[in-house]
Length: 294
Image (cartoon, rainbow, N blue to C red; front, top):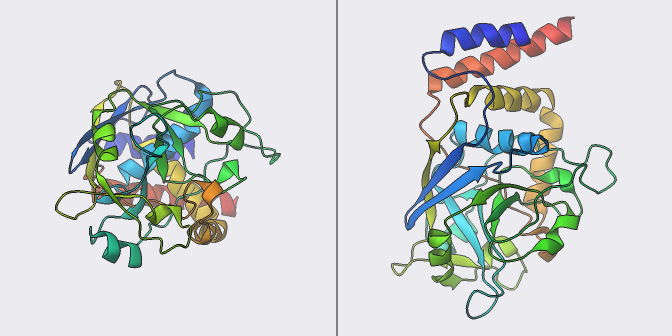
């Protein structure tokens, strides 16, 4: 696998570097302003699988035109604000009632493992869920269920730490986030308790807030999409049956304790190119065949 990866990297060098990177900042460009996400701000090696996960979704273009579907702001003011959640669904059509009735969720990549022995506790100590910290949305009681849907903490949510929600990124400038929290909200749950459609932020023109695209705002010289994408596609192909089952479970979940449970993610970024992604996919398939034959 390592030899094949190096060969592929040589062919793709003109497009992307092939070494792992850290300290990158991703810009989520929305129709109300930019949200800049600093990945792994403390350089904690334990967070790399979570970082690679979101990098793979960004590199594959899965966050393009995605809905910001949950602005759980508590009551008046911002003191009891909870989370801003996104990355779960396409933003088309961006009209709350039509969107809620016709939501389209992306097929998830393999969930991220943070609890290797399955005892319900994260394997390592990490940042707390404080204002500006970013964590993956989970099914209730399952730290290993995070895929692409994520939330930005709006206040001190340290009680989430013991439930498996691991902050892996930080929003240092919360101006756009705070602006979204001031918008009107639409409850399309119909009394069902579905948190993914109960606090939809809506602009004055009646349209939803969407992520138009994601770009790399800042990265170190070694940053690349190639490694995370190749790993994600290889895992997805190797565990296609379990991946499909996980997606179905996520779509079915919707309890109040699961942070909106049904949130998976969709989107798209114009890089890497389709040709590069085809090469990565072929590389993953080749490596898988070699292991099977061996």
